Length: 127
Image (cartoon, rainbow, N blue to C red; front, side):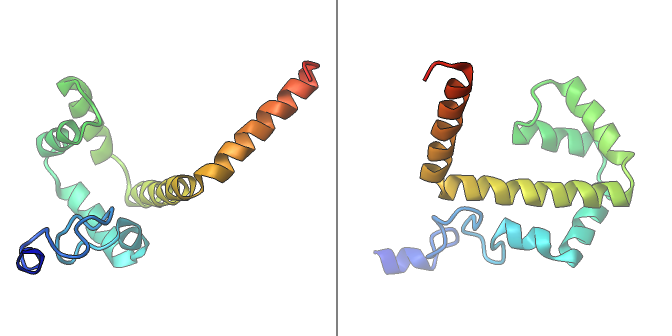
């Protein structure tokens, strides 16, 4: 049964992997954000997108809940220059990499938080 499901879209060996989405050719989003040609295509797509379509995309992704706010964000996104969009994509890629690092190193992050709390309490005179 598993071998039959492997041939179905979305049921392959990478279907459970984050970022893969089970779709052929999707791969890792981080790798896509490192490819300059892919970044250029994303910028062209965002520039050519209708403000109503972008507002619908923002609402369906859950980034905003209010229709007026989604339309305002879509208008602002349309007025960005190519350099600003590249900077935004680069910042997004770095934030995503940092988030993935934090998720992979949960115990290290917890230990650093405990250490910071201990140092703060020591500085305040509680310890």
